[in-house]
Length: 97
Image 1 (cartoon, rainbow, N blue to C red):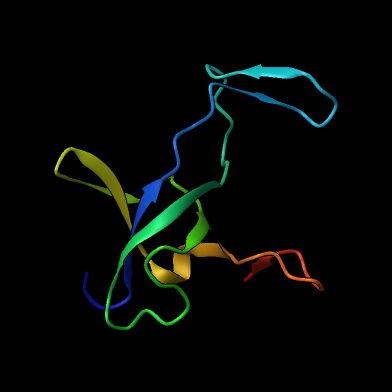
Image 2: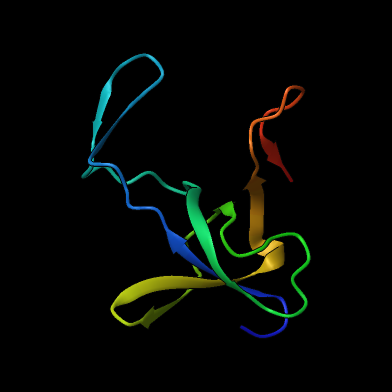
């Protein structure tokens, strides 16, 4: 990867979801502008906030896709990431921006 680019493998979407009130949402329902979690698989030389193996939150819409050895990845700029998951801590949410 070059410059400030990050290569991300998206986590597979669940078959169905449940709302906070317990309503089942089938997999065929498309949620507009929904953020997705993914795993960082490669970083450019100028990326400072994430490293390979980190779990990140991003918007998968309008991102560049690339296929490497049959696996599909997204290529995004570091500034397009919304959050990075960390290990659970005693005094926080486990996420930092």
